[in-house]
Length: 228
Image 1 (cartoon, helix red, strand yellow):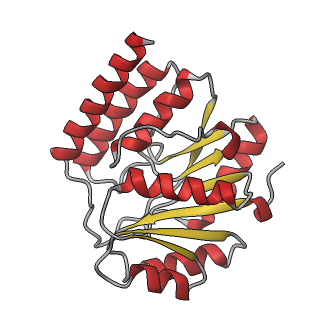
Image 2: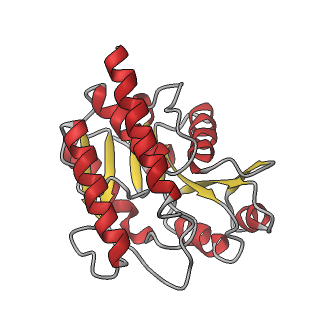
């Protein structure tokens, strides 16, 4: 049974100096330890995260969300945590939902729990909603598991199911590739209802470039599966 003492919250962040401090403080107030990976920001993201009580790791240059998550996974494993929760650093994920992810993990025994925003997606921009539904349907088909919101970065992972060598994608497609890898190894993936807070922040996802990267990842994954 995971407790707050052995669950760490991980936040990959890029150019989030204006928001990351509030995000970290809100998580810390709920009793969680926080690791922020500053992925080559040119602003004070790392300093603001550290001042708010997080462990701040820094990349010398921007390498993408996938690489930032790999850095975080390695660090959390080295520190002896048994599980981690990933969140975004822009304030879109509500820290009040952290116990929801843990409760679903306990109730189902699933080693992976993915946040599900699609039960009430009215606040989500319609383009993102449509893209999310299409990508989630495709990934669920490939995984042979129903995961209604595969694009949600608010997730719980038990460390023992994360391999030392993580998937190859370096940017946003990395999270989808990780789900495919987990499903291929027979790891059950549960979902938990979470809220998303949309404010004035501008998404760092490029709808054209990152969609192409997503399908490129799918093709590479299919080729690897064929080769065995």
